[in-house]
Image (cartoon, rainbow, N blue to C red; front, side, top):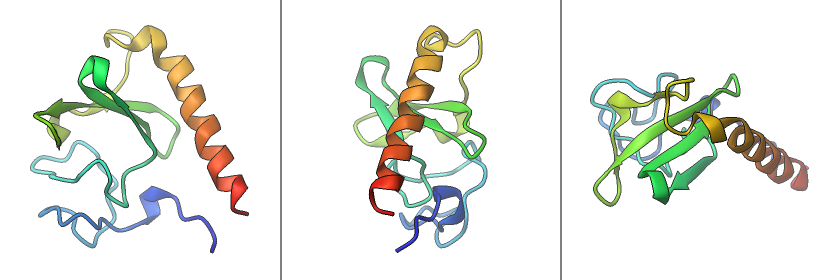
Length: 109
């Protein structure tokens, strides 16, 4: 079965905003997508920073803060920029996520 990138997969987590639709905007108000939603790119859960990090379609690194044990503050999600607390580690994290995604995709081809 060919690989389908997450930005081309419909939401499958029953989010009231995205359910059965493509999810092109990660920080859309009232989004309730889970971190395991089919539309969510490969994600690194960063327990130390109480957030999750992931690459968007353009390979830019995003963060989303965790709320509680399994909820995510999608409205405040955004690109990791120079003023973000994880910026110094962002380049290395981005490279590792790209390598992991590439390895997984090519392993099944």
